[in-house]
Image 1 (cartoon, rainbow, N blue to C red):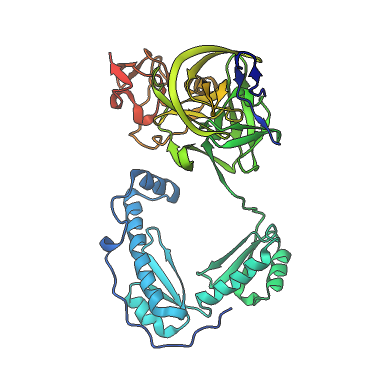
Image 2 (image 1 turned 90 degrees about the vertical axis):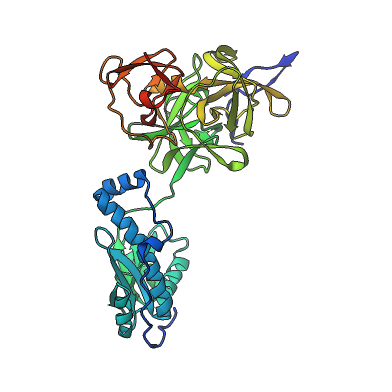
Length: 455
């Protein structure tokens, strides 16, 4: 990619291209504790009206009815207090607590002393008598963890299973687990082995303004998180990479591949990422604080706009002109927006956002963030429309599902980009678009008078 360079008699106009990468013993038995009082669910912190998004997810993923999901949340909040009181009362004899049942109505508490049974049952829990206290199991796991350093590829997961009163080692083979147990010097009778080919790995978020690297040689900036069906990714500048180029993230971990790219003519591209990465609505703002993207309503000329990039961070200015043509050394790009926001090489592809509305991805310009300058961005709505992408937004889960008429001529549909003057029909009513934007469920025409007017 091209770099900004000096020109006699004035600032050179350039694409803001990518930068070259230069054991504890069990306690003695004690007098059984008095039964702790059973608190009411109403007194548990955080018990209130659960969010609709939480209830929907519980119903979907745990196969619950709404009533069961609500009951489960109340039971879990209340049981935590009971379990904590019992743990404090049992002291070193405590060996763990767990919930069971469709609505988490059943609390079990383990102890190493059968004499604790009446107190546990009086607190509304099921008593389970085991051999090994929790603290001893913690000591076993700590030794396994210390020994696994550098060998965790074969034994990647180690945890205390309070239900079995054992420490579990997940390993790629029984031999690998046995080697770890022997090297740690722990009692194998306290360890269960789970053989699995699973290899856990870290998961990372896609955030606007963060750096990413192209084919291991150049750096650009993430624009905005997007999705296309089940594929997650991000929008960025076309001059950052051609279709098929591979990317690594801000942490140099394998990230994804350019799915499509256009430059010159336009300056737009998008990268599809692997399952280690998740698209988010976040843009990196001042002081590393996230700004959440709510949509893509196009701001007017004269509006304030801010930019996030991996070289110069967060800077703001104003929109000077939309629908601008600019000629770089590599060719002409049409339809960009001219701004007074400064930028430098490596900021390419980064987010331009006005308030909470995505505006575009950094293309090129002149000047720098020491002397000031002019920067152009590729508008986001044409990019989303060209590639059939859906912008990741903080408002995507809100709103009431609309009876979309997207299958009919002129029907409204979430995910479609609408320009000013576009006409749609929804629920038998016709509307005219007031501001260019990508439609969202929460912004169906009848609920968004700032975006649509009935006609």
